[in-house]
Every structure is written in structure tokens, then in C-alpha cells.
Amino acid sequence: MKLVLGKNFPTEPPKGYFLTKIFHPNVASNGEICVNTLKKDWKASLGIKHVLLVSMIIDTCRQYVEFLLMFYRNSYVFINFFLCDML
View 1: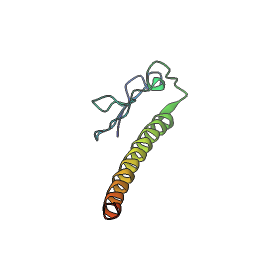
View 2 (view 1 turned 30 degrees about the horizontal axis):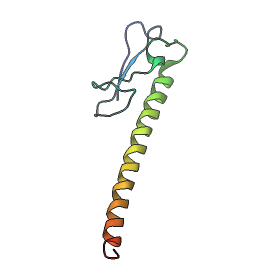
View 3 (view 1 turned 120 degrees about the horizontal axis):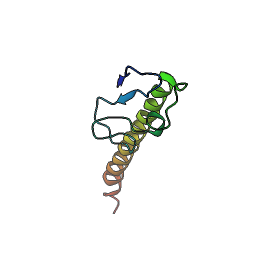
């Protein structure tokens, strides 16, 4: 993750970017994190901790989806391997 703090931080929000490709509704194609609290709803009191928390939540969602896909792929292989002989 890359965090860009402007000259006017903390009165203006920082920009957070994922450096690796990630497919998530709150991440733009260039990797920029796009949530309201990092845009129009930013408050100086939120600080860096909030930015890092948001990025951690997004990354956790990505890891969960990857786990589910792996589970379904493995289940499919398992079912086809063991049940094909029974049919």
C-alpha cells in the first residue's frame, strides 16, 4: 500500500493506493482507495489510523474472497474425483 499525504494534511484527506492489483468496489482501477471518509466526509480527527484501518478491511475482504474461491475449486475437484466412480 502507498499512502500519499498532501501539504495540507490533516485538513485534507490523504490518498491511499494498493500497489498490487485488487478487485473491490471501493478500489479504483489505478489502486486508489475510494471511500467517502477519504473523500468528501474526511475529518482531520480521523487521521492515519483510519486510513490504515480502511485498507486493512478491504484487504481482509479480498483475502476472504480468495479463500472462498479456493474452497469451491477444491470442493469441485474433490466431488468430481470421488463421485465420478460412483455414478
